[in-house]
Length: 403
View (tube, rainbow, N blue to C red):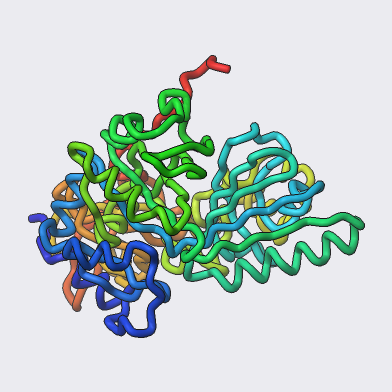
């Protein structure tokens, strides 16, 4: 039986603080309150976990069928300019920027010398001398230090000049328009040809009457959609305009979390951290062939050894059809009730009518179809190792063969 325990109960306890006074307000704060947003402190920012007129599960389903707007202004937006900025940024991450097309985006990770993941981020190559980066709010100060220290070292070593610009939410806001009807809603309001903006590509354009918006076709839900970077003073106006479109509603962080989990996407600090490598996290694809050959990123030796020899553990998905959802910290047992792992994220999956979770298991126990036992509040429930994503992704990708 599908557990109907509200997702927000767990999120409020684990991910959020009720102490609003300590949180920073985004440009949409008053707008959220005006529209019935239940505000919580998330990563130091006051953001809506849900809205009064639509619960988390209903908001989740609406996003899967229509389109929703999420305020993600807490994310750190950074612009990097200067000759050599590709070499500079490749020195701190695992991706291949030199072979990336202009105005294309890619998911990558910062790693430490032990191969552990310090953060995951999306970097857009505008051109050879200009990058745009979006990284996690909770890791803001760490990421700024990583980028700033690397910039100082690179400028000194290469006798060039790389410049960083870290945007505060009061300068630029960020919203995510997600769902199968996101494109039809946006194309009515922008001068960009949305049909030619494919998954993980980016362009500058106008939305409504607001110029200078960076529109990137990406998101964190597994659905088609866009992240739109907007001058902060125009963020409310753009959001209101989008909400005038049929089938577009506001959504909170509760639905964003369940959507990303159904899509098999990692949450930094839960599913990946400095103690997990890309190989262990089933993210080996974040280290392309050219970077493996060059082996010139932090932790390269450890990661390359794991690629060659395999890792002893692996992030994997688990589906359970009975009992409560397996939350973060739930013990994973084998059929003999021997502990073999721990859940890193878990929740009810409104799209499936089942509970889903992910966690790390010994590699030999991570094969799809393997039976496991979940220990929840001293009771035992059956689970099944499953491939991810749990719900098929529906990204708007360029057809094969198109140039």
